[in-house]
Length: 126
Image 1 (cartoon, rainbow, N blue to C red):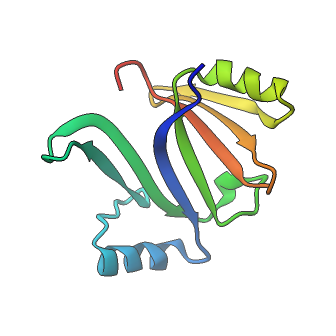
Image 2 (cartoon, rainbow, N blue to C red):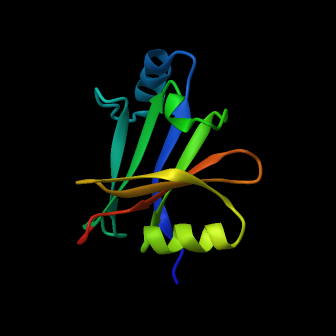
């Protein structure tokens, strides 16, 4: 079974999300949107879109719970439920909650350092 197939997003925790968003926008040119982040569209070497996106955002970090880390990475996966079952069988700390929406299927596992890892199966065709 394929496990991680790419990075779907990077999420940063900030004491002052609005100020940090402004810093990234001003100094690194990231087009921070009203939802607190940006979507980087995937392209080939010629700049042609290839049908994927990596999300990047800054927030207060409450979404990272139970982790207290200052970041969370979202990894793309091909079979969320299969991977979660395999991780449970391997003794990993898989969180009980999953989420399914028009954005895809989401599940979470804690790594040995206490970082919450988000696993995302995009909707079909993405």
